[in-house]
Length: 106
Image 1 (cartoon, one colour):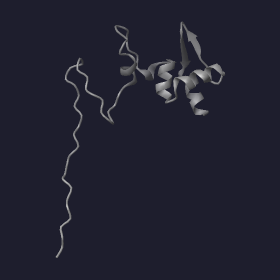
Image 2 (cartoon, rainbow, N blue to C red; image 1 turned 180 degrees about the vertical axis):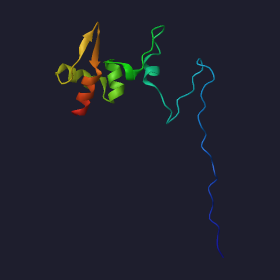
Image 3 (cartoon, helix red, strand yellow; image 1 turned 30 degrees about the horizontal axis):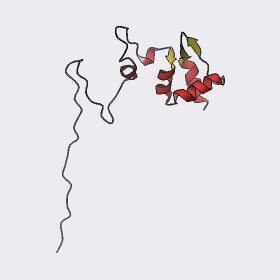
Image 4 (cartoon, one colour; image 1 turned 30 degrees about the vertical axis):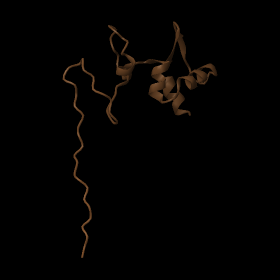
């Protein structure tokens, strides 16, 4: 006599829905796309939002998020003259090309 094997129930994955108005924010889900500009420009106010892909210079926090390296590591690399950067008012700015070459050399 054969004993039937238990079968897993078929469950279709749910697709995330997009909010109907720009005022509503959907919760972040694993695998959902999050733009860096949305994370960094929450406090931007009335300033125009420039996509990260179009920026020629990056702040230390933007460079950290883009490269996956910590801000402390990037700052120490700037201090040791391994990463080119310049000061703009009180903040450090890094040219995107310099960040790309630095990360490529790691």
